[in-house]
Amino acid sequence: MGQEFDRAYWEDRYREHGHGYGAPPNPQLVAEVTGLAPGRALDAGAGTGAEARWLAGQGWEVTAVDISQAALDAARERAAALDTAVAGRITWVRADLTEEIPGSGFDLVCSHYAHPTGGYRAFFDRLAAAVAPGGTLFVVGHDHADDHGHGHGGSLEHSRVGAAEVAEGLDEREWEVLVSESRSREVDRGGHRAVLHDSVLRARRRA
Ligand SMILES: C[S@@+](CC[C@H](N)C(=O)[O-])C[C@H]1O[C@@H](n2cnc3c(N)ncnc32)[C@H](O)[C@@H]1O
Image 1 (spheres, rainbow, N blue to C red):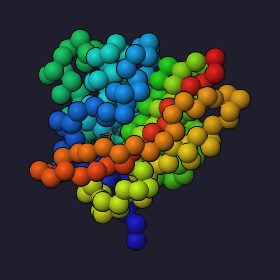
Image 2: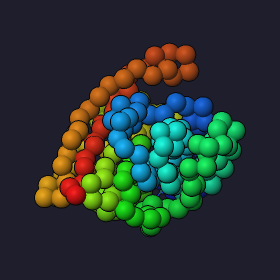
Image 3: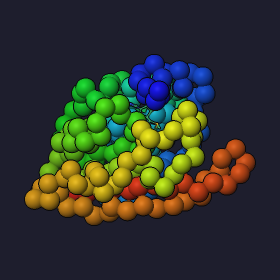
Image 4: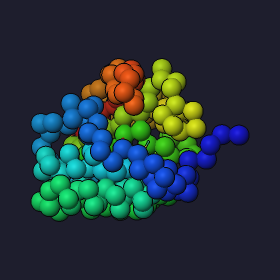
């Protein structure tokens, strides 16, 4: 039977393993969003907040949403300890994004390795709808090429998001797809080097 990636799973995972607390921001986000004029951003599935902190450091007002209170508590504490001005630009919200998106009209909606249960299409449709005209939708997922479980019960099935699949759901009269590709990068996995394949989508909602 497949692993259920529900709230209980994520609360346990963060309480038991505290995963990602010291991680740097996602390099694909840094590469694609550096230089965009800061505005209001939604980080969907913010985890322990590395991307939210980086965005706030760039001047974005960030709504960082996660299903796990344990993740958000750690993220809030870490942000406050590092830089109070940056922390002041982040609002941490516990919500199930398959049920609700807290807010709308964001200049940037980003999601890195989201694990929504249920259909991806509905999930990304909802995230896309929260982007303001002229704003950006940015998604990073584990590419289908990856098959080394990152401790997710050995399966990445739920975190595999093809940029092309997300792009397919965007109406081209309303969206301009600027990046839709797979990128590989080296990461440190407990002292050894591994290659991670990211699927990266950046799309701009036409104004
Ligand atoms: C693989 S982690 C990625 C965390 C972070 N974005 C990163 O790149 O390190 C997936 C995150 O999505 C959150 N998540 C999973 N399902 C969710 C849902 N339905 N609504 C909101 N957040 C969810 C999890 O709690 C977890 O923090």
